[in-house]
Amino acid sequence: MILTLELMLVGIALLFLISIVANKFSERLGVPALLIFLVVGMLAGSEGPGGIPFDDPAIAQIIGIIALAYILFSGGLDTRWEQIQPILWPGIALSTVGVVLTATMLGGFAVLVLGFSPLTGLLLGAVVASTDAAAVFSVLRTARARLQGNLRPLLELESGSNDPVAVLLTIGIIGVILAPGTSLLAVVPMFVQQMAVGGLLGYGMGQAVIFLINRLKLEFEGLYPVLSLTMVLLTYGLTATLGGNGFLAVYVAGLVMGNSIVVHKKSLIRFHDGIAWLMQIVMFLALGLLVFPSQLVSAVVPGLLAALFLILIARPVAVLITLLPWKMPVNEKVLVSWVGLRGAVPIILATYPLVAGVPNAELIFNIVFFIVLVSALVHGTSIPSVARWLGLAAPLEETRKLSREFDVDPDTPSQLLELVIPPDAPAAGKQVVDLGLPKGALIILMQKGDERFVPGGSTIIEIGDTLLFLTTGDLADVVRTRLLCREEPPNVSATDT
Image (tube, rainbow, N blue to C red; front, side, top):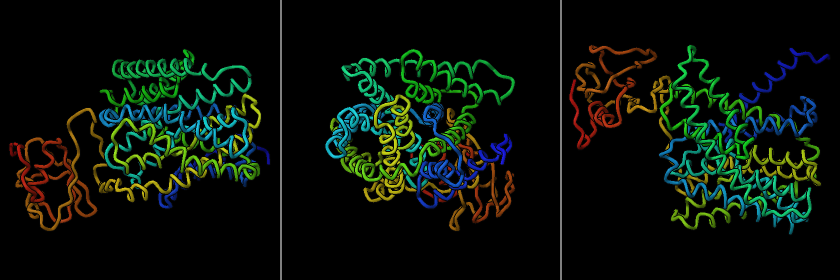
């Protein structure tokens, strides 16, 4: 069969469709999406049923870098500053000191147990030392893995900001291997420069995005997402060109934009959430295509040993040492130790030795890929259970019928409140005009059976009806009290309509 453009488009579309449908089943099976996407890529590869020939680590590296930039920007865009402010310094410590400790311990294990040379062992440790933002975001932002307190922001901040250290360690060690006599201490000033330039340019480019979006007044709303897409690439490229870390810059730029007043902010957050999922699929499919399952056989034993050491010893010890200055409960430290998801970043970093021609690069790549598979299976499937066992699982939020169809600007005090009328509610049998709602609370949608409509003053409220209110945080309890017969909240005054 002749490979035409049409057949290529059909093949790409089928890969995307299979990945999306498989992700639906991954939620039910408790398997993280990254594992599904990797497996689909492997099956589509040259040794799988798909038979797609792909053996270019340089192209896979480029795809991974671009995809990760958009994933990190989306993660920062959807993170609230008030959530990460209390855990800023522990998060920074985990993303720097924690990464170095993990790389050192795993490197030592590779030398003593796996028989690697010191530099090659340390290179393996550096490649898998950082947790993966795409994996952490996708797992922790599912309903199954809701965590109490500041644990989710801490883990997301760590995964979003620890890539620079792993990248610098990897590049520095490769440089030493290829140029004997070079000292690893040369990485230190490079690290300071990368972090400083990346952070400053990320903040500056974030402010530039805000300025452009708010001031350009584009004629077509659809151009605003295009503008933000362009600025992500510009932020990464400009930062890397000027000697900074592009990954840190795009994450900081997203964080700055997400915590500022921006035109069409809600729609932009949703747009970039979709782009992040698209990038995850593209990235993991490409990395899966790069793997030859037959070559993984030689990496099973060393990969399994390294994965178990990383999960059970290196990550917990690094976390416990790093968090010593902060008084965190033991169960929280244990959970942080357990959530050490490895994903696309280690695989992308494993392509660096391949591209540079480092000795044993293929073995390192296969071991890293195996470590990622083990981490996805162990961590990705067990986080909800471990959180419940440690007493740190947050209650699942009630599934909303109506509020998910509406957007409220996160920069305003308004919020949506959805209530289902129970049998004992005083509102049952009353007309809307007789509910005694406070001024500032408006019913914007009502569901009665299968019918949805905007109620009038004479609409009668019945048991089982669902009401969606547009109100403010300080009046939400008043509305609940008037409709559901709860105790009147203290120190809240409301003027009845």
